Image (tube, rainbow, N blue to C red; front, side, top):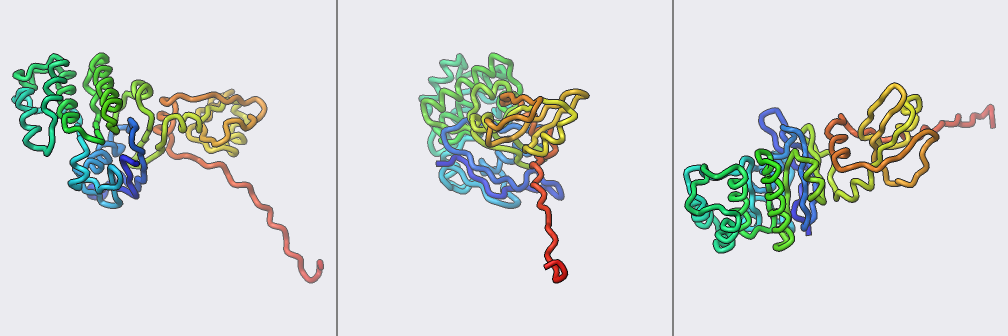
Length: 305
């Protein structure tokens, strides 16, 4: 089962594309990390997946093929927008009451018990809670809907390290206990490396790479060798990013054969998730290895037959 599928998905505002030609499949049961610079199209993709924005082109489905934004999809998708969206003048209890009235099903007992465990009083106004508590309140209200897909747009941005750790721990618990699939956007790549098992990288309003983390790490290598021979080495592989020095060059490459012998003077190293992410964000585009040149032999003429 796939939790998200998009085909040629795009959104245009005026003459500018916020996202274009995005074809993506994310299997269920994963915590999918969505990474990219500001303006890359992350929020646009999440909003269209949640059914909050209508695509300009293409399609998006969730939870085994339900169109994003349909009744069947909305019943199984919970979305927490950036900056922990809570009404500052309402108490935590009022927020729970509002959530219950706006949704078909809300597990009120679960929400009350979780807020009690977190030390968040029901009678305290949301605006008086700390940033971490506001994020936990928003997450609690989302989880109380018992979603199959949880979409989190930059939930860690304003949190301190302890609050970030607590928030991610709560998300992982929901995945383990309730089988929730998660799409989470964040700039905190180092922390995502600990919890994410699926990666989506957006840049310049387009999808750069997507796949299971283990497969992506296994399919990329950092090659290090003499700069004088860098062009020859690069012509044989798919280069994601090049870093040249006077004597030595580093090539982060995509490969399907990690056991292939290295050219003399070159070494192959494993890469981290952060290295893969940064390479795709910095690279203007992936260069495929040049195809071998075919020599055209002259056709025989009457005089040479």
